[in-house]
Image (cartoon, rainbow, N blue to C red):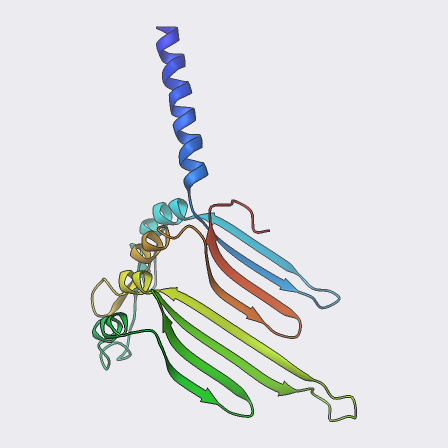
Length: 194
């Protein structure tokens, strides 16, 4: 009996170790490079997010879904728009260029890409005034966007999006850079945000 119990325990531990090793993690890293800058690192296994999201029942977030109030989703059929973009070829659909910022919205393969590059002059108009560039890069798999929109018309299914995100072995989702801050959100199989 003891050998069977020990064997079952070893099997369960080995299975748990394999499951943990294969799990995908979502990471958020925020670094403030100013002299008193803070650093934030968040590392959450997607399996934990999947388990916890249905238990939250607060305001607009309930059962893993976010209720979107107002007419925002009533005026555009986002599902039809996303399906049309999915079927279309790769392209840069929107380009806005100005002296202050450049914005691009594109599709590349199975991803929607949004890039914002803001150019601004240093706060003081001096001989040494410098230009700084703030950038935001967002990469969303179309599968994840579809999953997010898989609920009712007035909701975003975050739980379904998290599940869809788990299908990607490694993926940078968001990067933000400005003069003193760096933000990165990504998914991979590591339990560390390094």
